[in-house]
Image (tube, rainbow, N blue to C red; front, top):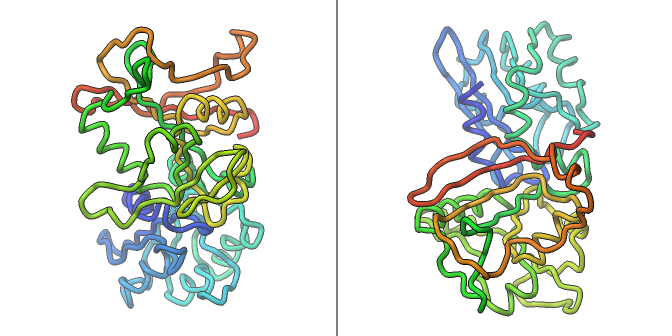
Amino acid sequence: MGAALALAERGRGRTAPNPNVGCVIVREGQVVGRGWTQAGGRPHAEAMGLAEAGAEARGATAYVTLEPCAHQSPRGPACSDLLIEAGVARVVAGLEDPDPRTAGQGFARLEAAGIAVTRGFRANEARRSMAGFLTRQALGRPHVTLKLATSLDGCIALPDGASRWITGPQARAHAHLERSRHEAILVGRGTYDADAPRLDVRLPGLEARGPMRVLLSSTVQDVPGWTVIAAPHDIATLPDVDYILVEGGAAVASAFLAADLVDRLLLYRAPILIGGGKPALRDIGLTDLTKAHGGWAIVDARQLGMDRLEVYERERNEA
């Protein structure tokens, strides 16, 4: 399952509206097939893994990060049917598919065909792996990652607005990797006017994975090469976007936090002090300090050259 989860990451930010799923097929202790959801959502991970396994899939165990789909599509057959036809003996899955077209029916179809099914294996990791698809299913909007690059005292720029560069090359490279894992990237009008950002991916081999550029502005409607939205909640209207990265300045970051739309926070901190610079955030509507606690959980921390990265996930009662 660990290998399937790793394969699923290859499709992150490329498969919407389908989930980025990973699949590994094992027979007699040997991996005979691997697959992950391809760009645009097809082929599915199971179809790719079964195609590689061929006849070796008979009697094998398929490890999949999400329940195999049960619904037919003009773009391809149901994965549960493919697994049955291939003669696999067992399916180990991370999560049940929340899509009502499958939602347990894939498991039921497999079991009716005599295939042993194990559900919920490494479910938390599978849930994190497919956060975009699951957020879209549950909340009707993309999964939002907010990126902040600050000094130790919480500044994102000098008093005059100069911000190149607060963090070092390793942190900036990691930020470009994050861009490649999202279908869209958003900034506000202030950042657009001040920096004319390209918002592309400048890493060798990943240049083609530049995300859709989204501008948050209530005063302009049409900017060539950009998709313009008027308010943070309008991200729900973006087509085929399950993962969106917010890179705007303090106003945009604060607007998304105030609307409780941030699901994941990337905090890059450089070992510098600015003092009197531009703060990372403005008012986010907090009036009671006790309500500031318990909303965020750290899930990763690492050193990137001279800088420190901390990754937090939003904890919500409904999740």
